Every structure is written in C-alpha cells, then in structure tokens.
Image (cartoon, rainbow, N blue to C red; front, side, top):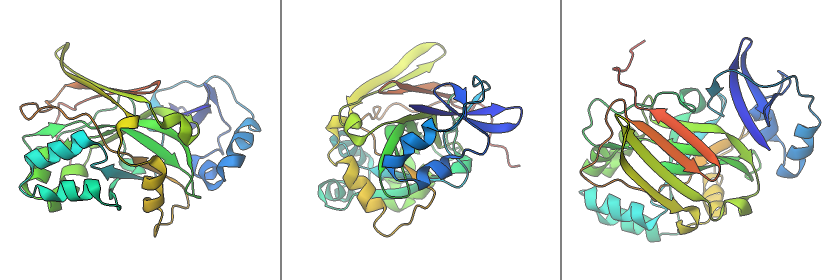
Length: 277
C-alpha cells in the first residue's frame, strides 16, 4: 500500500493507492496505531475518488524528521577527509550509540518536485540520498519514503559542533514522493541511486544499497525512542552511502534525482535567494 499527500481544492488530502481517503484521515492518526492494526484500519476507509493535484511532502506539520549520521563506511571516510576533527567520525562509526540529530519540523519539509536550497554562506553543498523510515508511536517501522538530507559540508567540516547549521535550514530536507507501507524486512537490501543533472547533463551519479549500512534499522529506531516520545510518529533518515567528490558542489538550478527501491524523489535547487517573509 502506498500513501501520497496532494494539494486539492479543499487543502491537503491523503490518498491510498491513487484514491483519496476521507478528509478526516491524518497520518498522525495512522501512526498512533500499532503496526498490526494499520492495514485493517486503512482498508476499512472509504475512498472518495481518484487522487489529483500536486504532490505534497508525505508528512504533516506535527511530525518531526530525525536523521542518523555516519552509518555507511563511505560516509565515515568522507567526513574524516573533510573535518578538522577527524577521529570523531571513526569513533561514532564504531560506537554502540549512533549519531542522531534533529533534521526538520514537518511543516518545513519539501516534497517531490518542490525546490530545495543551498546555503548562501556555504561554498560546498551536497545532496544526501537516504532511506527514510516511517515510525509509529510504538517505535515500529511501518514504511519508508525517499529522503534528501541536503548538507553544507564545509560548515560541518570546519567544526562538528556546526552540524545544526550545516543540516538544518530552509530547503534542506526533502521527502517523497509518498510513503510505501511495508515491513522492515523489505528494506534490508534496497538499491539507492543518486543522479544530479545540470543544464540537461548528468554531472554526478552514484549508487549503493541499504545492505551496506553498518547499523540495523531497528537499532537506529530503538536509540531514537529511548528517551523520546513520538506520539504522532516520526520519520528517520538513515544516513547516506553516496558522497560526491571534494571538487563537486551543488549549484542553483541543478536537478537532484534520488531513487530508493521503487520510489523516485526529484527536486531542483532553488535559483532564487531565500525569501525573508
């Protein structure tokens, strides 16, 4: 089953497998339920016609997006090479406790074909394609979407304590195109692909698989929920195994395409300065 969120004449509406769900439906209500009850709950809802309208990010304002870092060897190597404090990344890669950080409030997330941004005060910006878990209020994995953890590598590389500024800003988080509901077992070995085009030409591409991740998905979720209540669920980005080379940086108007399993997320880098409104 696949959930998508659309902009309709009546405002945001959720759809299941291409058909609108009744307007009272919310992702928060679904994620309040145990995983074992979610399928029956959705099947009992009456569809209200074919879904249409632009896709919105598959998240509501009250959900949070969290992220894990240094979960792939490639990520550890890249962070070590760019950082002034190199051993911190090897230590967290080998440690029992993972790196987890807050990425975005739900209302700040961009959806499929919505613009992302690069920081005006950064010279080295990259997309990070990440399997993004959908977690219910009971700490269970109920599905996934594709995610882009846009990051300013020079800012974090200058000092790891600058990570929030490198990771959390307007246009730095994209999710989509929808949520594929599934069990965690279905996510063990998904292909992850990244392609960046500039003026119609591919300027970088790479791929990995979720099986290359050092940590288990359940381990990441368990650490996130140890001392943190998630009453309306949450989304957890699980780290990247694709890192462009040092001489590459995103530019305005670049198109970033991320494919994870059967989901494709595309976003253009906003060519305009950030609005102050």
